[in-house]
Image (cartoon, rainbow, N blue to C red; front, side, top):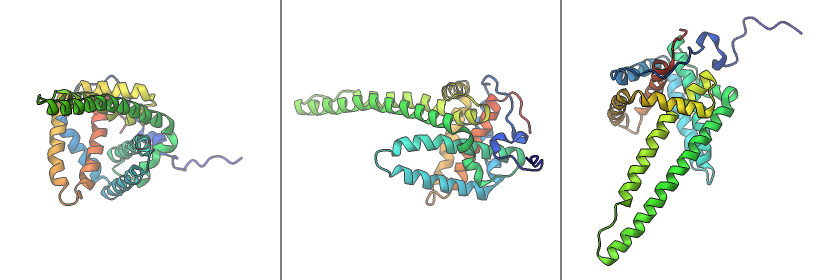
Length: 258
């Protein structure tokens, strides 16, 4: 058996020691101004490889569009594929931040190495999403029935519809907080799906203020990005993805090898 080639490149970015993640620490509370600096760093990551980033965004949209029109199983497949592809985007972001280059293949780099925990994480998100929809659906249809009765008998409709909306938002936001950093925590630190979810939630919870600023700036940037024909999202999309990596690095990493 011949000796392995010492000059052979690593099989995937996940195992690339030159880009190995730093030490995972307890979530750190960051200054409010980081809400902007994360976006600025995300744009710098985009500039490391505009062509590959745009290509990855186009392929991502096409994949989600095709999967989304499939009958019956579309919701399940979307929740399975989204964490796998987002983990690949995190690998691409790390490559861009550390080496200044992006490769299109990074988008699928996590599929082989971390598919099982990422799929399980997607199923956790799917389960919580289904629970939220069931709770809010019951309240919504109850409010519709009450409104019809109120209209029939000349009374005022109840407030169950507003309650359903508030509960939906109140449950959706924590779900998003748990999902925000989970792909990065799984692919870089081997966290289990549930540990990644809870750790991501804690990281967002202690950074509510910078994330409020982050959300406001992101919404403002989306307005021109959608004109014309959403073409600006080919830039803003990768920028926001890179900003997730930038926030993950600031909030969770104790040390990072550059």
